[in-house]
Image: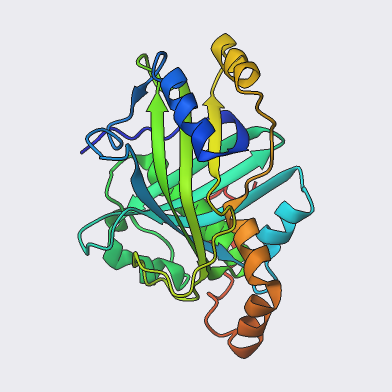
Length: 272
């Protein structure tokens, strides 16, 4: 199994750039970083990522993003293909200003429906025996049940990723061809129905670091005259499709949401 390159805590700066500028930045970045193992041997240096975002009937996490809530989170299922044997990662992504923290647990695909129905996670559902992954999955369940979240939006894009040759403290990613489509069941497929493309042909450049802002990052920003911008794939997808699509769906079918469990049914310490 390939090494998990997840940066559990990091700072993250985003820029929306043209493809022409992205190619020039690639040449600049390759002097400092190497392609990660998923981008290697790909003809366009990119691999496809799929995320199924969960939200409440009233789109709580979406509105938290739109309103710029300082301490907010998103719930998503991340996967890379539609093979029955491939893993699915339950992820919590938290933001506090520019600081990002992530928790995730990889599960067997045949456990996804059971977990989304509101059943509590068990060690047998996970790919790893690492207790941190079970804690992450339990925390995911607690947040999901707390707002009665269910599948809302399928987001997919091609990622070109560069990483430090010494550890995982620095990453640069470029995301292209971002597509979003409403999805109200966890189909975990790779094809979207009538998707929208919120960023058009633009590329989302992300500079990610876990310690201090590298000097060469500053030089990169100055050299290419970069201007920071917002690029929330899930929120921008919802806005482009239109909130009424999701509210209409919620008013027709509220029974699909998992029932809320009392916090006492989860392990102590998950309430915070």
